[in-house]
Image (cartoon, rainbow, N blue to C red; front, top):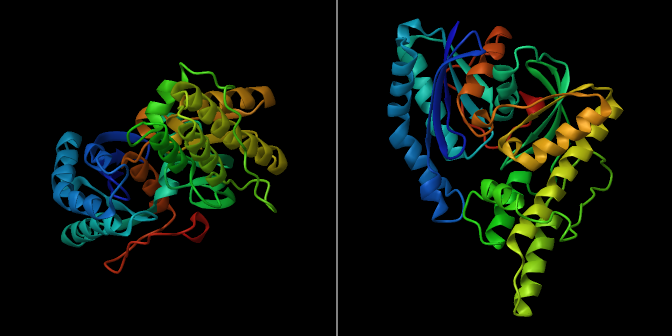
Amino acid sequence: MYILAIESSCDETAAAVSKDGREILSNIVATQIAEHRLYGGVVPEIASRRHTENINAVVKETMKKSRLSLSDIDAIAVTYAPGLIGALLVGTSFAKGLSMATGKPLVPVHHIAGHIASNYIAHKDLKPPYLCLVASGGHSHIVEILDYTKFRVVGRTRDDAAGECFDKVGRVIGFPYPAGKFIDDAAKNGDANFYKLPKPVVNGSVYDFSFSGLKTAVINMAHNAEQKGESLHRDNMAASFQKTVAEILTEKTIHAAKDLGYKTIALAGGVSANSGVRQKLSEECEKNGFSLYMPPLSLCGDNAVMIACQSYYDFLAGKRADESLNAIATLSLENI
């Protein structure tokens, strides 16, 4: 079964073609990072305009590299939620038009479900049920994967997402957007125990995250140093901050796995590319006898490969959409 998938939930215009869900025939991503870096973050209006300009060429190139024609495609998949509403509308509108023009069925895909599915590409033996930590610029979730299309969120951020915290802290200590890779690289040269940073606790939920207090702590330390005519040691702060985030994400995930009886854990989302998070979670899983699955670095960020993979299982489950499909900015995994 061949599926053409489209992803445009934030600042990456992406398309991919898959065979039977787990074999990738083509994968094209047009990034906007350089443009948004000028503003220190994603500007929604600019993102939408660039998607509009890029999407046709991206889909054409994807089809060309797949060596298939649209007549060979069995279904068209698209990310419809969650994300920047204007960005999502570009992808959903294009996919609906293509579906109507070709008569191919349209499969709506949830963005976070796509991130989770990125692990299926690299790990053919991974099957539900298992527990997944999804950490990205817009989301930080601990999710029970009950089946390929059934999810239960047991933990989520109450404020900033982990990736968002990386970007905001990175800006404070002098790194460009997106700051994740710069912090990761700097942390390798720093002392992770140099700065003592807080691990915020959410009252009433042992699995929920809160990163705003951690972000604020770094901002306050930077301001206090500036008032004294001093500056933070950038590499040491990067290492200390990365260690703290890795510990927060790992501790809550391992806690949830033990409480809920899971022996298999997966990692997904943009923050899954961070070496500190990967190392800490790997160490704790090995210590507890858990199996750990992580996507390759090439599939950690936003891409259409993950949407193509998830859409295969959504298609088998009977999920379809028509021309009334609309983009949704905020939608829980449990409500799809």
